[in-house]
Image 1 (spheres, one colour):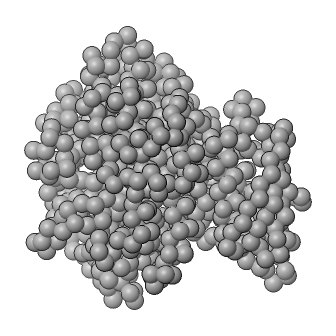
Image 2: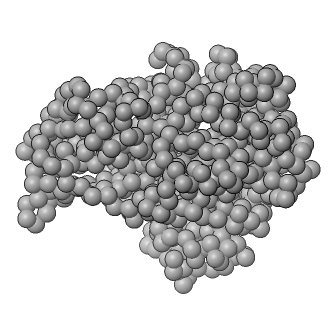
Image 3: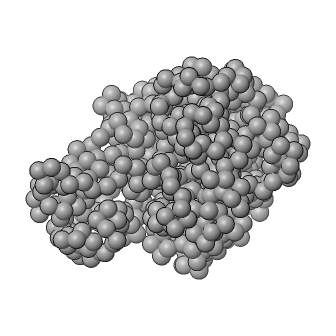
Length: 144
Length: 485
């Protein structure tokens, strides 16, 4: 796990929240996207690492894998009431599968600074790109 | 936004972009707007309304209403009808929040009765109607009960103690859309939705106590049809949808349609315009799942109304029946439905998509509740929490021109980030209280993001639709208490 690299893009979707993430590897890119998604929902500094969850996923390509993975985090927020502070993600070389270990805690309105309730990942501008210098970039627009 | 030079002015408030504007357009696009609103629309509206005009099987026109703004795939404020045999169904034409909509209930209380109790009411409602990140509702049901909700919407609620026997009749489609098929809903979608009934969510969703504005009670005679006897009568408006359930169904089928389009040889200009032939397996499956989400949204608003009645009973020490807390109406503004309309003199079945647009059926229509059939359906238009909302009336002209559709609200003009930079949530709360609006929000950031300044002028939208004749003004509704997610 390295420091998350993402920035919010306020002019892309007025009613929603967009971000761009970048990293040196696919795994780190997924970690940055997960951190950006979580930052939209809560101030991550107010989350505690009380429990650990592991997730394994497969998809037809890396775009599909990122979409499904971020959607999984939204599902865990709604179904299990869980938010995660840290992510360690390994993505296979072909970009079609991942293994993620994440630590976090249940939603607690008293101790956490909650923000927007993210409801879906959209396909608008969605995708992973390989930069010239070999870095990985992704743009994601979240439906609020 | 620069208006394309080919644009023809059809009337003071109707503009047409011909098929020559863009290769592949099957029908012209029509925008309902004053010149000022048209020029103020973002470039995305022109691109998107003409992209929609290029979809297979679209009938007559691709429409954008006066509140149109950029959305995913279709513009928000978009209306499009498709032939059920040759045309498509598109989740992008409905919105992620399936059957996001508005419900208005009345009371027989007047402003002076409620004014001293607003704080108490809002504080209690805030407890009874959960709002914010990851909240769960108090309705505990198992999967088979949830499937009944998916099939029967408001009817299930009324039969299970969450409403009155006649509630369903005052909801669009009688409180449930036929054709719901729970077997087409993923386990993930069900698991997200099963615990969310009776929750408000966040974003621009709200529950608001409002009062008829005496200075802007445009049509008291019509208002009386809807039970608004006094010119300062108190009503309650609810704006929310199918919560995570509808969003998950949207996400699931966006992925399915993304792959299916290749098989059906459909190419679209934007991934969010993903669609499938309505008559295909994927199209039928999505319609069945979408109807489940729509019915869950009707049920969600129903459980919220049940809680609102509880809150008023507690605060006013009178039964909600004695307070005349009937539903005035409930409208969907993110939906696709099979409806019958006249097209060039021929009655046709059509798949009408309304995304950020409201049904506006006129007098005599079979689908308008019996109580209102002589006059037309109530149309509920939600504004920002600072500027208020409107009750309008559906018209025959809407039936003739826009498949019985009108606008839905005001639409943002400022991003959430920009609003937060300019507005402090705590200060906004205090300033609104000084202006007679007591607001309680799940977070101050969320409150700042929904400041009135971040939205278009709703009055101009409403005036435009009135001028166009596709909905008529009945009353402006002024907020006095508000709960935000």
